[in-house]
Length: 432
Image (cartoon, rainbow, N blue to C red):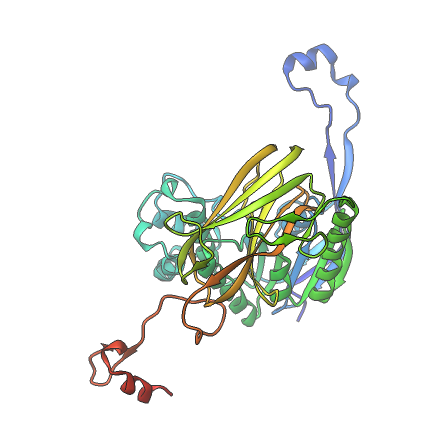
């Protein structure tokens, strides 16, 4: 049986006009003969790999490295300049989620339109409709026009449609930050289910933790060419080491230690590093009542306020917030760029807020790590690691990462009764 995806010597050449006339009068005055020849650049060159059924390949690299171009060529969008792409299987793509939705149609109507566009028949969409809506968790809004939906709701619905199309090859481009933490894990679980059924998966992501967790192999693109390929952990380590090296190269040697808003001293190279052209001055954690907190309950709303100061004009930086355990395991990670938010030029002091409507983490001690990065992700302006503590209260007996709302129910006589109706000793007797 042939591989699901074969890419051999793939290259894509683009032509960029740097002196294109901006108006008709400019064209008439200067004429076409004074224009320079268009600039040629290779977005991809000499890229080769094979992806077997039931395997997952992750693609990493800086912005402009050619990741999305590669994914689009594999998906049949555009033609390669050189090389070839062979596809054996029904391909579905998680690219630009929600772009096919019509704003004046309801969620219900858009599900049918998007499902047919994705290759389902109307009958198949009708049969899967209830499951699609349940998965999206948008039942109360499904008959409202999607122009009233938030961007997160649109992405949820679009992901849910694609998740019910039984793909044999799945292409994923930076769309896993969909909804709250619980929904993101549900998306990752669905992608893992695809893999178990023999689906070949190609993922582009800036989230290296996701690449390590989900992928059997990783490919690092730099300048359109393959820099490294192989075991995800090894490739990610090389990629991150390059980013750290560039950050260290730009780090001033005479920067004195700073003091965080938590009172902890930020020591350079220990828990703070960066070029410091754009500095993180402090972080405040606020609860649902907008009060400063360092302890919350599972499922609480929490807001992180990042105070920053840009010593010069900084164009399009990316801010990031991670929640990690004491052992360094990253439980949650989100960036403005990963969410599709491109910030304007920043200069001077300001504040950026991130609100998580439900933080469904199990009880324990965590740290909130914050960073701000150059627009091409080439290096960090400032990064604070394990400085800001956050405790999640609750039962220490809970296992795993998430603390989801739940209820126990025991049915002895054919009539369901809440478990809390029984005495504690009966509760103990029924425990396996």
